[in-house]
Length: 260
Length: 242
Image 1 (cartoon, rainbow over the protein chains, first blue to last red):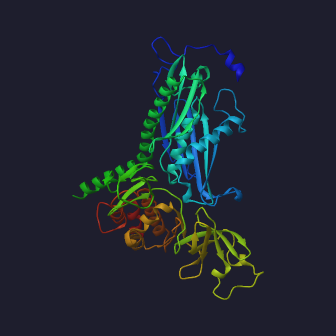
Image 2: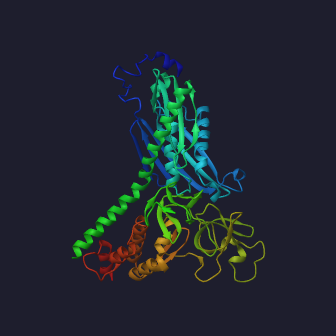
Image 3: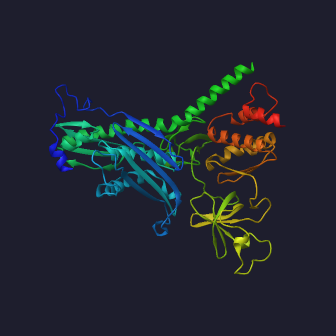
């Protein structure tokens, strides 16, 4: 990876108009597309696209714990696997779970655990699979956003949804939602996950360095964006059922007018 | 006391329902004096009790529920039965045979083999133990005929309707025999395959439109032969058969 990086020509991360490589403003999010319930065999599933990130999340359970000894007598165990498909990056990634993936699986699990009312299903497991099909920076955040949709879609009782996004520093300026190139060449990256219903932070990580003032602005920006993403999550969850409702009501109207 | 939602409103997990002295009903949780929804579902208001009728969710056994299970294993004293719950159910041999408990060494697979479907009733279940079920009783026992429809357990109350109104319409209009397992497995058997098809399609429609209002009327209109203009393809097919 390092070789590739050094061969890359340094690009201007911010041009003279103040726009980024992909033409975004500093405080602009990449377009997000969310969908739920696309996997038939899973109890709950979600698909999220954030810029070039394409991530699939699937939830199975609550189900019998296997192996049995991992079960807890007072609550359900949440298990999480974050995995990047071999074709998700430019250079083929080995399909075996890397150190990075194991670590992300753990932090994603810990970001979602406070949201799940796991005490409703003692002695069971809830299995969560996050598969990154295409990656372009900020996939842990998009993964969390998608995974919380999948959990809600599975009908698992939750305190609230979790939304996540990253803020970073590129070319000396604080910028929202870094892409892969910006993350690699930028000075800092700060992924934040928030449960907007209680306004609690469930994940915060940082690499690079920020001054306390910069951190303050960056964090502020991340939390605000998480609230915006949360709104989209809510509409996504409801839209599927609202459209059926509308369709039914339309039919009803038609039926009535035909009857007259 | 402030109410933030109205009856039948669609809510997402974590959405605030009310503040103040409201009682927390199904699928809601409280924090301080605020009441929140825990699932995607439809709000139900009963006096000062707020609940959410979920759109999806797994089956949690309750005592006296009739469930349709599948034998997954034969053990020393009986069978392990998969009832689509997060817990495996135990069906002891003593809860199958009318006579005294059979002596050990008896071949249980002659009665129920792995893969057989058994209509059974939940005898006991709590957080600390796996469910115990029985196959003794009227209507309980091995399933030998009919067709299986699996729907989400969250939608079973809607399929049954208020005081069984929905299921009564289905049985009356299609003439098929319908056995509803609380775990989401429905058994349909009719004299004619067309009657079964009509019933299954109606069940599928109920599952899809469970969160909408006036569903019972729509099912009645769809299946009923008395009303003109609202007959669907399916109903016409069956009426021809009749």
